[in-house]
Image (cartoon, rainbow, N blue to C red; front, side, top):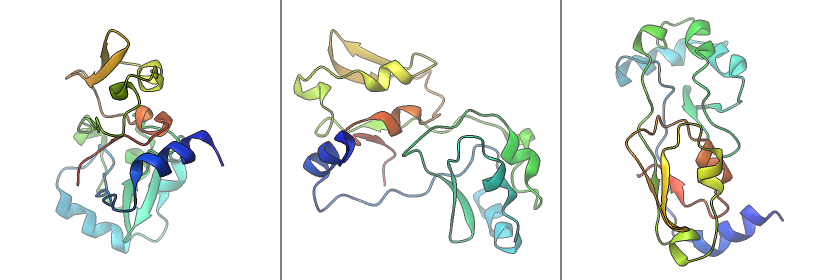
Amino acid sequence: MQRREVFGALFKGPNAKERRPLFPPYFNKIEDFEKCKECESKTCQSVCEENIIVIVNDKPSLDFSKSGCAFCDECAKACEAGVLSIAYKKDIPAPKIDMIGCLAWHKTICSMCKDVCEVGAIEFSGLFNPEIRDVCNGCGFCVGVCPTQAIGWEG
């Protein structure tokens, strides 16, 4: 068992909420994802360099458990249904830090999320109490490195 799994089991608890799917940052309208059901090749998933695109209910969704989005545009270029397009490229909404699950909010030195953040969006008050600033592009790299899974999207 890895450290992430141990901390995750301790802090997550049995009543943890399922997280709603996040879509790749290249779409115009959520309704357009209905076209993905007709796509058999799912090339958006196969071209993802970070392997974060998973197919859920025949639609592409982002799974940040092991990596984050590099905004490489490959999924948008490969989309045969026209759902994903570089013309619609945008940031992913910023995740939230769960203060109850975060080690740093409990006075344990941990800065894994800050260390991996390429845009400097995670700021600490001294050594503790991290917060995600407005410069966050939602890449999700911080989500996968958090040992307690305290970073994610609501609902």
